Image (cartoon, rainbow, N blue to C red):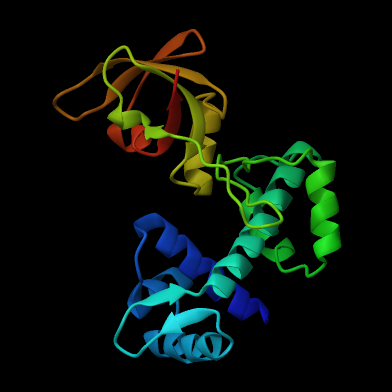
Length: 217
């Protein structure tokens, strides 16, 4: 596959995992920042390779071959993110763009050795699951912090928004994966919340709370 074909597969995979249904060419075009006509041309190529199910004017889904191929691209991307953060001391807001380049490396042997070298992690630095060599994913039950009720406590296990701006904000507030967060109170006016995190209290907006995943404890 070409880099472009891999990027399309990965985008379709992310779109279908978020809404668990077929996706439109317009949704793919928006994610890929390209024209719908260009998407249509690529979908025809991917369909010929038995990587997507595509019919004109209908939704698009990945075939079993396409789903596995997409998972392998995601696997490489997320393993490289772990490597960059844990071994090269990049911050979690810096690694995405670099991993975008590294995910196209073809050597399966290299990726499997990288996986073993890192201790076979199941999550990347943002809390997203890493598929194993067979495409299996270990899923954990998680909730948005905004969904918690007063006095519930959770461990931060991921972020919904992976933008550099949001991750930098979290660094400033010293909120990281593994942080224990107790929801103390919720404002009815704007749904902002008062939280206790690692022994200190602070207020955060509903927007922030709606982009933090926690596992209840």
